[in-house]
Image (tube, rainbow, N blue to C red; front, side):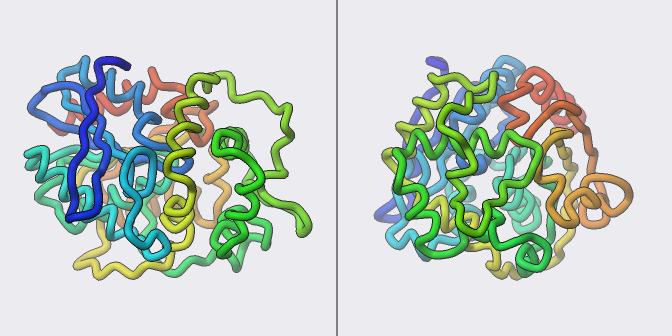
Length: 312
């Protein structure tokens, strides 16, 4: 881990984005994290790609980890991530890159490839397929206690999370999201209450990992993380064409709870998966859960490197 270098890229007058980087190859790969993750969630992939001759870059989104919070966290948008990504590519003199996105990081990866196809060699996403931007329909198919609906409600997650320190919140979310069932609370129950205090961490997630995440979220808090993604899902994008035209790879854990979201399985299997991503490959890791890149790093690294090798 000591081989990974850290720097800050300035955006405008107020923002400093934390960037982690390793490797010096001509071909660069930029990683986009999910929640409750930060750059550190890509540690296994960054080292493996650097050892294979690639330049690996991961950054904390604004308001996450070591990056500055936006001036108005409750007004942060997905477009901010897209603009920050472009700014980082320019600052690091990266004309064209591969993008790797996990969880909600898949969305900016796909959207950036549509808006800036000249900057993207290919897209790899983990756990989440391409879903063309549209109004959220979760409320039509999932109960009120569905975690995303709860976290979209102003003040609800803040009160729930506020009962614990940041490390405990991250611990609980990692345990919840490592299960194969969608986190849904009962009417008089909060999402954090779905995890008993004596529940062990997943075997592949160490106390040292938890300490790292906890310290970073202790610094940043969860305000921006609740805004993006959960409270910004209805953002409208003026896409010239909603089709992803660059080569794409989707890696899915067979036990990832996201597969149970309405319509998601259709977008990972069969011809419907290629309707909006015609150059798509899909591969499953049968025992994988939502954090497949941390749970099975050797397999994930091989899939990513094979994909990069085909399109470099």
